[in-house]
Image 1 (spheres, rainbow, N blue to C red):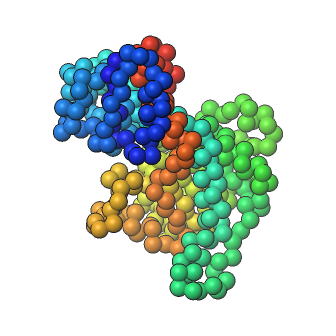
Image 2: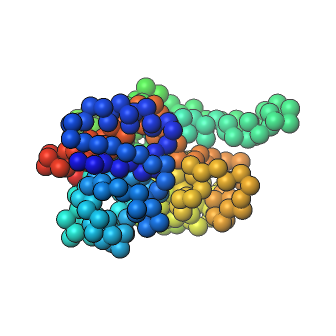
Image 3: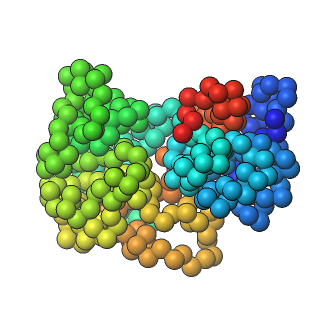
Length: 329
């Protein structure tokens, strides 16, 4: 089988070469730094399987073209797969899988954002650049004294809970499908979503993006939260209504906001846009607030997680062909 890997970054190359050398002898792997688009279809070179990331959106039309060229397997080196029309792929007989990675890197990043927001690190850093070492306005809060609400108790949410236990804070959780292991631990109280909103000093979001969850943090949700609530999101930007976030910051209903993701981040995050005019006014507007931290979708970006996504992407194609892929969609 021929497998073509697209959007290969330099930091992924060593893992790609290593994994390619362990695949069955009849597998040939070629790579490209380009995205898979209509303009690059001729670079498929007869590949039956392709491995992509989210900068290669595969809508129904694109999938039809891939099918016509003999592509039968698509693996995305990401947990999210909203850039692929999975239903269209199924109709065309194209198998699709996503990848997973250990939850700890993202969980650690979420806790880091919590601490940075609570200890007002952003304005402290700004002041240092102009030799202002004053204390006024920088008094923070201690995580151990707070009630933390965890939205979503899947693998990453559970890892976050594990880290939070070490701080000694009160932990509330919401998930439409509660984890028996989390509930049995005795250290976490499952509550309704409204109860989580109203009782939490800090809310961290770890839920997948679906139509049912798109914009789940909206004006109505924020109105139910405590004054001065701290919000953390390392999941998907589209889970939050940006207009509602801006209103919450301006009214000081939201005490601090820390996000590693942002709606309409494609084409901005992971790209050098130093000399460009960026057409995302909401991002630019939110970024200027001293109590808002925006990082560039890097919570996943650790040596272990990158290696895992590359390996699972390549092996996902082989496993789908064998009918034994655990992450096939």
